[in-house]
Length: 149
Picture 1: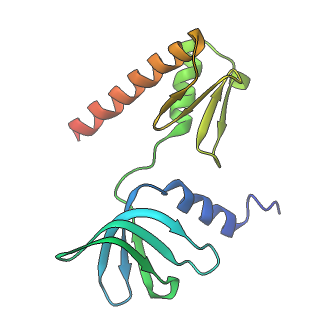
Picture 2: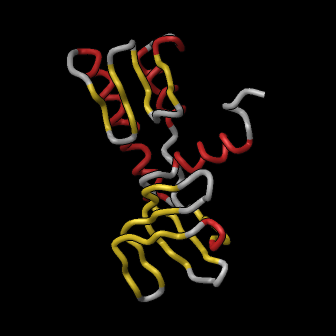
C-alpha cells in the first residue's frame, strides 16, 4: 500500500485541508471551542486553534490535547480545487495536462506558469489575466450560491 493511501495519511490530508478554516472542537468534558485551525500534531492529535470562542469566553489561542478531543465539527465546506480546475479547462479550452491540481499544496498550476489557490491567482501576462477572469467569475458564483442558501 502506498503511503499516500494509508488511512493515517488520508486523515491528515483531510485535516490539512481545514487549516485556516473555522472548526468546532468538542472536548470529552463537553466544552465546545470554535476557532481557526492553526496547527496540529499528527502523532498525538494535539490541536491549536486561534480566535477561539468557548461559551462566553474569547481566547487568542487554545491548545487542545488529542486525548481530550471528542469531536471535530466542520460547518464550512473546504474550497473545491477540482471544480475550479474543471472550470478553467472548460472556459479556457485547455487540456487536462495543462491544468494540474496539487492537492497536497492546495494549488492549481495552469500551463506551468500560473498558480491558483482559494485566495487568488499568482502570475502576470495574458494567461494569468484570463485565469484571473475565470477565477473571479467562479468566486462570484460561489458567493451567489451561498446567498441563496
